[in-house]
Image (cartoon, rainbow over all chains, first blue to last red):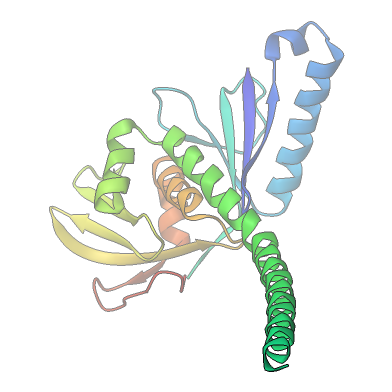
Amino acid sequence: MGMLRVMSRRGDDRVVWDLEKADVGELDAVAAVQEAERIFAAERERGATAFKVETGKAPERIDVFDKKAEQIVLVPRVVGG
Amino acid sequence: MLESTFQVLVLVWVVLTALALFCLALSIGSHWGDWGRLLGPYFSGERRAHAFMREMLTPEEYQQVTTCGYLDVTSPSTPDRTYRIPGAGGLVHVYEHGHAIMDLCLQPVDVLPEGDVVVMHKLMILGNEDEYLMKANRFAPGIITLRRGFL
């Protein structure tokens, strides 16, 4: 299972997908991956930074959507205060 | 005669009091309804962000935030450097060899709940420290105090 989480004032919005089902072409799973990819691209366009978060590993900044990631967290654009 | 006049007055007083209480109840109901509508998403967002923070932090880190009010993150590039992230907003204090060397101010453009902000700092420090330091405004330690809610 993969998960995309977008930080927002509502807490976090998320999209979950099943990679195994997406790989065999199950429509709902493929649609979920596509939706996650679309949100990823849109948020990156707005200046968000994406991090791949995997259990037991340090978070890693990514620029390209990785459907194999356990979890991707999108942090909105930040500025010095 | 006097007794019946008194009874009428009491009856009028009871009716007027009931009417006043009814109006007051309506007013308060509307008032709380407005507050509920305004604050509902805020509390819901804070609750979700808190759950998210609990999920993204180790049990030890979560305990530190809840008991001490901050999270210490060790720099991935400089092991003697520690970033102290406040749990309720404010400047991030940077320590090297136990001494404060600078304060950092970095905030999201979109308003985020407190729990999300803690996770944001942690992810950026561990996953993208150079950019984190590049974007943050730096201050000498201790010269600026930001009260909660002003960031």
